[in-house]
Image (tube, rainbow, N blue to C red; front, side):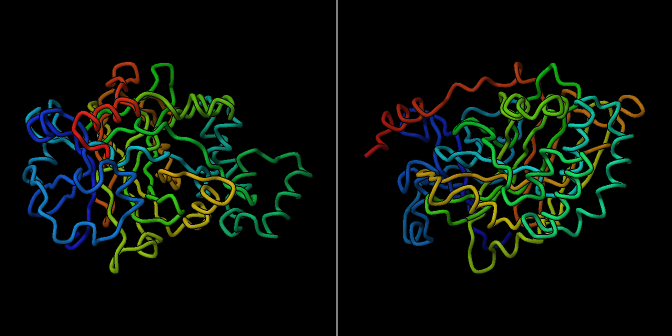
Length: 382
C-alpha cells in the first residue's frame, strides 16, 4: 500500500496525550504513527473536513514506530506505555446492509425456514439452492425481472422477508452498533453464550461523510448469531448488536487518484478462522458479485430523508457464510471461544480479532459523554 493515506484512531498513554490518556486520530506512515488531534479532535471531524491539504506542511507529533503500534494493538496484554489502535471511527453512525449477495440471501432464507436450528440447514440449503440459486444469480434487485420473480413466488406461497430486501427495490439497512461501541484490531469480539450457531461476517466498510460522499474504506466483522435471527427477524438487534460484536479496522484508507470506489468494486475480502482446537476455515467474498452497487447502498442510507451529521461507517454485506461442519456432522460451523479471525484484502490490510463471550469481553464504558469529557480535559474542544 505504498503511497496510501492511512488514517486511524489510537488510545494514547498519558505521556503522549498531554497528561490525560485518551483517543486521538492518527496518521499511519512508514515513518511512524503521528498524532492528528491538533488537526481535528475526532475522526468524524477529520473525515467531514477531509482534504490532503489538512496534513500538508504540518509538524505533527510522532508517537511511535508503526510496527510497534501494530504489534501492541494485537498483543494479548498491550504495553500501556505505547499507543494501540482502536476502531477508526468515533462519532459516526455504524450502519450495515444485509442480503447484498446471493449466497447470503440464500443463507438468510435457510435460517428463516429452519427456525434457527443448524441441524436442518444442510437439507434446506440443498432444496432452496436448487429452486432459487440459478434464478437469483441473474436478477438485479428492484428490476422488472425481480418483480416478476416475486409475483411468481408469491403465487406459489414461497416468498420470504429476506427475498423482499434481496430482490425488491429497498435494501436492508440496520444499525450494527452505537457510535463508539465498535472494537478495533486485537480487541476480542463477542458472541452471546446462549447462541449455538454463530459466525463472522467479513465485509467492506465504506466511510461516508455528512454529505453522503464516500471518502475511504476499511474492513469490518459483522459478527452474527444465526440461530437467534433465524428464530425471528425481529430479533435482529439481539443477533447483531451486543458487547464487542462489531469490529472495524485496522485503519481507513482514504480515496485518492490511485484508490477509489472502482478499485473496491472488484476487491476480494478474505477470511481465515484458526481455532484453538486445530480447526481451520478459509473463504473469500468478491465485491464483483454484490447484487447492489455500493453507491446504491450509500444512497439508500443517507439522503434527503435521512441525515448523519457526523457521517457513517457502512458495512456492505458479505457473501461468505461458513457451512463446513465443525463439531458434529450436519451442524455446520459455529464459533468457539478463542477462535482467531483474520479478515484481509489487498488494498485494506488485515483486521484480526479473537472470539470471546460478550459478557467476558471488555465492557463498553467509554461512550460519547466520556469522549467529550476526555477531549475537554486535554484542551481539544474549541
